[in-house]
Image 1 (tube, rainbow, N blue to C red):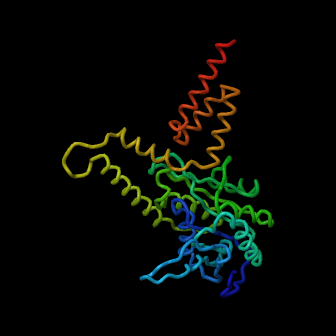
Image 2 (tube, rainbow, N blue to C red; image 1 turned 120 degrees about the horizontal axis):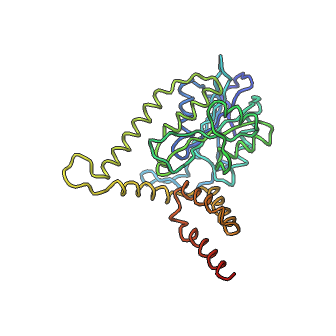
Image 3 (cartoon, one colour; image 1 turned 180 degrees about the horizontal axis):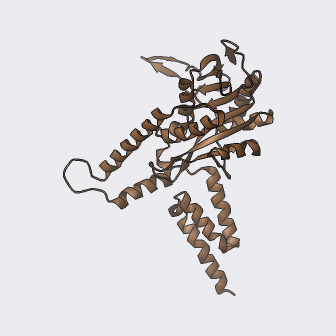
Length: 323
């Protein structure tokens, strides 16, 4: 159920939706917009029908059924930019409810004649924390995608957008509402850490596209601060802190830690499926091996697949011996 506090008069608004996720990228991007543009709340999303309690909460020995997470709708009336409806959700529902949940929201924003849906997401990659965060885009139409490319976003060639960030766009497309998702790259080993660099990158693209004229200095400063804190952690691991004594870890050790963190972070299902497909193609045509090796290196998972990869060449050698 969605309870309206007021019914603002909006002209063809943009709809932006965000929930907590990897690197806090989506939620913090939307939260920054809410604060920077002084959005006003106008409706509450009650989610009891989509969340079933798995436990009770206890406070000083007294137990009770937990309150279902909520979401709030905000609006902004633009002067030189479009009107915007913003949804900040506390928690994503279980995946089996994602489509029905999305439809519930889409039907609500259709009342306000929303013409575009926008979501954000993190894109884990095997990169360093000081590397540039590239912004990727996926859209419901080729024309919309082309517009995003013109302002710096890169087209997502393949893969999946998991959770509500993707599902709500798919449901919106069925309802004849165009939409797009902006994905900011984050290091695999930082999926649980706030990543303002990716947030800033997404907001830069969004600001250009909707002419929002956002001042991102505070996010950029926050990004520098977090980078410095990670540098300090790495320096400590290497034994470069002020305490005397030999360094317990070498540069190679630190690199291995980073690669191990990346390797043991869950590989996206879309990437794993692509790798398995390349293995099948390589079995038929060994010339595909270079492409396969490149994909394994890209995701820093060669060690995980090393035996299987080398086995392709052993099989080929045995076949050649029989001819």
